[in-house]
Structures are given as C-alpha cells and as structure tokens.
Length: 337
Image (tube, rainbow, N blue to C red; front, side, top):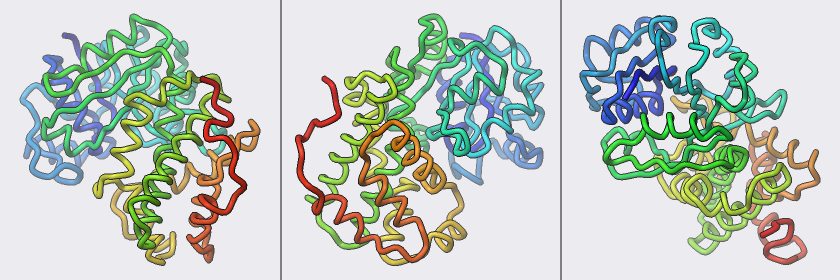
C-alpha cells in the first residue's frame, strides 16, 4: 500500500496513523516533542491525546521529521492550523518531491485568511495540485476506536486524490473522492464557528428548536461563503458540510461546542481558553472568517455573533438577536443551486 508519514501526533494525527496502518500502509508518526515520541514508542499509546488506544505494530513513532518523511508516498499534515506555515517550513527540505500532501487542518491562516491547502503548498514549495484536503465527521476518539465513519478527500488531481483515498480507506473508515477542495475547506473552517454558536445556545438554556435553527442557518452561511469563493453548493450537502457540521455541533466531545457552552453559561473567553487542554479552532478562526466574508460581501450574522461573544464583556444573547431579530429574506438568498 506504500509508506505514509503522519506529521503531528495529536488526537487527529494519531487516529489517522491508526487508519493508515489498518489500510495496510507502513506508517511513521511524527511528534514535534521528542519526549512524547519516546513515551509513545515505549507504551504504544498516546496518553496525552488518546489514552487507552493502542497503536498498531506497523506504526513507528519518531521525533525526527526527516526519519518520518524519508521515502513517504503520502504525507498527512496533521499540524494545527494555528501556526501551520511556520511549522511546515521547519521540515520543508525533507518532504519527498513527488509525494501526495494531505491537509487535514480545519481552519485558515488568520493573518492572510488563506485556507490550509494554500498554506501547505506555499510553505512546502509544492504545486497546488499535489495538495488534497480530507474532511468529514472526524471525531478522532471514535475513529481511533474503529467505529464506522466516512470522509471525503478532495483535490484537482485525480491521481493524488486516489493516492490519499487508498491509504486512508480502512474497513471502518470509508473515504469518498471529490474535486471541490475549496468547498471542503470552507466547510471545515466554518463548522467550528457554528459549533460554538450551537454551544452558546445550549449553554444559555435554549431548546432543541433553537439549536436546530442555529445549525441550519449556519449551514446557509457556510454555503454563501463557499459559493462566493468558487465552491459548488452541492459540496455542503455532503460529508464535509452537513456531515461534519452535525457531528461537531451535536457531540459533547466537540471542543468548539464545549467552548460555546461555557460562553453561554457566562464564562469569559480568556478563562475558558486557559482551562482547555486542546485548542478550540474557532477562537482564532472566527474573526478571520468574518473578515473574509466581509471582503467578499457575504452576510454571516451568526459568525458575527460568535465573534462578538468571544470578545470580553459582550452578551452571548446577541446570538438570539442574530437568529430572530433581523429582517427575514429568502431562505436560500446568496446560494446558487
């Protein structure tokens, strides 16, 4: 099946290393912390991020990026979206020149408002058609437990799409092929913001009708932004859109939903950030997404409400206002079908 380098040993990277091993690939999992790599090698578990999950014997853990990347046919980039370009630049020289590059970060570079695949291509000096994006309902803990799930991998080059799909298709993890990388990445970034909005609604004690309305109108915002950036509206009815949105908004294991719940209960952003072990991506990406929407003339009131709620001293009740107090228009305004 080939050799796979998974760069990043967080929960998601570790889960994908397990998937690739179960797909019969030879896997090298890189952790940027040498002591973490040593501990995983010794215990065969990732107690920092996925306690109790045992690594398959065909996964080699290393703290040396060059060792992980040596001879890799497919490189899975599971580095957090915050600081992605800087992190990738550190091992640029070791990335094999013909390898397929799989971006799995769900967010965008805050300063430039570029999505992860663009950052990957530029940081690694790679042609953009070498980069594919993987997304879908991807709660890492469930995938590492080998519970049935599905995702989509999208890119402009069918050969690279198929290379990624092949090494990440395990018996319990079905991977579909797609061409709309833009839509897949927009969905992956915006769904985190909408999950915060749903969490705020839950934390404030609103009912299931409210949360369903937030999720659905959030999907409309996602689609409007995606269409403005050149994505197909159909992408958002698939795994990267509705699929990931439902999982992230509904699961109590979702970092972004949990973050929103705590805001809705009246906690301050700075306190929630300080107490969470893992990053809630929307904290940094929501303002960047709102700015990107503004640049393209896209109306995203729920996203704007989340940005306001993240700011100190702003009442999360603004979410309710964004949902119900604005002039009503057509449900599909701004979405070409």
